[in-house]
Length: 170
Image 1 (cartoon, rainbow, N blue to C red):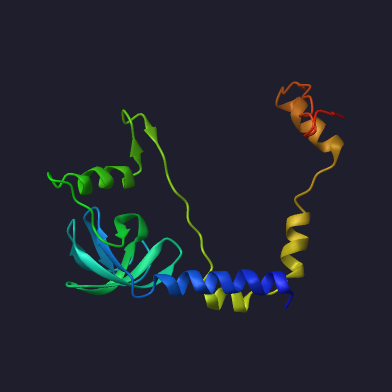
Image 2 (tube, rainbow, N blue to C red):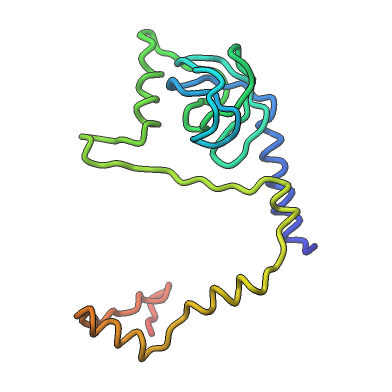
């Protein structure tokens, strides 16, 4: 294994182990799931401000131990560390609205895509020549691309290169 790959694997392992045993609090009500999938069986409901212990991270999910049992909860439903509440206690609901995926007037929706590799997936990863060949089979020639563009009535647009850092340009 190359030195650079060893550093990356070590960083991932340290990151995952640093979260294990860490406490967290729910910032919005969510379901405790049997597995880290949206369509997994619901074990229990976790109300806002439920204290949990993080056991493990997998992708966008945390495996937690809660008063309602052990299971998986979306990472965007939790605030790691100690819960912070203001005098009115409204900070948790404010954070919940941020984590809901909606922002501003409701006309803009933001989503977060999270894909992490766990330790087993990293160890099992192998070079797959067939998959590389499949990806390369999707390439096209310049003539084919121009024919497609003409059939879609696309017009060419001249784009200038960005200047090189330091002022020189090509």
